[in-house]
Image (tube, rainbow, N blue to C red; front, side, top):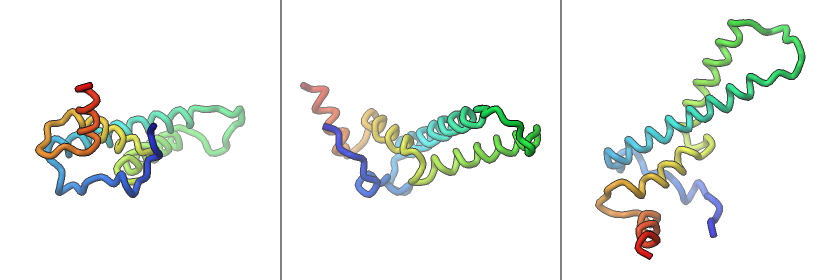
Length: 114
């Protein structure tokens, strides 16, 4: 059974303690979450509720796109966000070579042996 994710117990390692491979994985996972958030926000903005906005135009659309992009980048790099980056990092970290396997890596390795 899969338990609830508790941010306090799932805290990410500080950047100083990461191997270069893990740091690169974290950066890629955060970039993926940012892309996902950008697409999510773009889809939400594309929704038309049938009203004519008095505050509309190309300038506003450009501003909203830039704001959404910035929001997605910041959200994915902080501990908040959607948690996708943390989950992706933890899942893919099992495939990285490491000197000391984490508990999750050990569980995956044991499951493969069975």
